[in-house]
Image 1: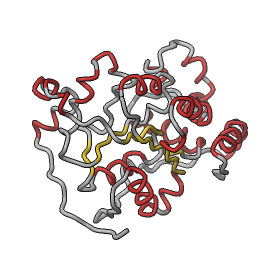
Image 2 (image 1 turned 90 degrees about the vertical axis):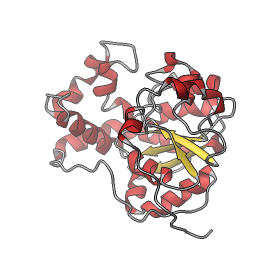
Image 3 (image 1 turned 30 degrees about the horizontal axis):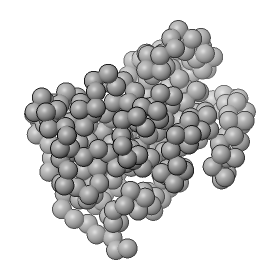
Length: 274
């Protein structure tokens, strides 16, 4: 399939940017005319989802949601289907539309909610990063944002205690302090595989995407049903620099995740090399 580099998409105005979080009533009133998502990037946070989604949504055949992370199926489900559809273009503007909410993979309620909301199941893309590196990257992000104050070792030691404060998957403890739990990939994917056919899923190893972004972008484009397209610049988004993890802590976490990773390898029929 040929690779082509079409015109750049129009940049949103300030007013349009403001509508990302709260679609105006006019958009909600035309919800029935809007195209439900054909694909959803479901995870994981700190796994390259922002870069992949921006590359995908830069394709001229792909319409993006008004905001990258709509979070309808986890945080805003009570707003209703019309609110969700208001985030997407009207039917006929693009062959394919999609969104990316990396918390979806982790929230156990999301697969059933999608099945009950969307008549035609979309295609799902899951980007999985070495859970040790993903946990440390998430910690560093929370540290920068002022959400976390504890040293990393103390944060992971207190994770279960913090999560026990609430049973709500979108509560503050689960959203901010689930460093290790989010790396239980097999447990999370099993819930999705119980609800949707396996051929609706594309699982990308984040490390492979970082090493060969264009190759895996093209695979994702083929998966969602559009022609190959390479952006002019494959900039890595949300890239941060921070000190390396303590060697003893890394060894400890590698041992912790070993059984979870083995379960994942059996589920997928492939060794992720972690």
